[in-house]
Amino acid sequence: MSREDPILVGGRDLGAQVAERLAADLFSGRVKPGDFLPKEVELTETFGVSRASIRAGLQILVALGIVRRFAGQGTVVAEYCDWNMLDPQVTRWLVDHADPNIDFLTEILEFRYAAEPYISAIAAERASARDLMAMEEAHKAMAAAVDPLDGQVADQDVFDDADVAFHAAIYRATHNIVWAQLSHILSPAIRLVIRRTNATADELRDTLERHRLLMECIRLRRPREAFDAAIHVMNRTAVDLGSSGRQTHRDLIDLMRRQVEADLRSAP
Image (cartoon, rainbow, N blue to C red; front, top):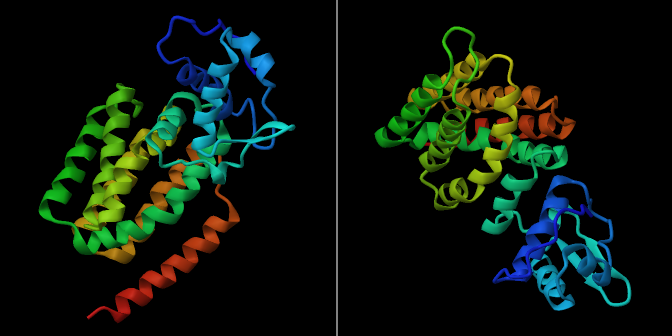
């Protein structure tokens, strides 16, 4: 575990502070699934708090599925798939602490590969004028944050906010209550990937053009093209993230594309 300044014992909720400090190590990847955390007595020395506060902090992580405690063995970090990633506390920790953790970034990208092409196809069939306006406003805000001379981002925060808003608008354009809610829940996690990829992108004009094409496919009610355009956006994200995508991405995309084709053929 990292040994920074001890937690201030005058804090109101020492258990929450313990959980926060442990989360920094867990989400950054310094401590990985399968690793054991230090014993309680070691944590009390590291953080300068009582064993009761250490236990309270660990219990927060247990409740979120991040760690498991075994009598006589200790506390082990659970596999990422067992973490409650949709909990607001967990998504905040993702944004605050997971930036160096390429495993998290890859997992989030994999989710987006699986989800966004399909929901983009649905959005192309269901988007309202208000939905399209939200996408257009977000895209304009993205463009306004890019320097027209060198194609580099001039205001990273504005660009990132607009990028998240663009994708959230597509989720909402499905007019499906689950997808619409996921856009709110997953925004912090998506922001994490966007922040890393936009910060390393060599040419943001290319990113803008891919988003524009996706928006136009949705506007023109072309679900097949919207599906492929969303993949095109994800491919750019993968390149900027330093990942060409797993084989499962390609296999899943082919399967989903066939499903979209079948759905469109059977539609009245």
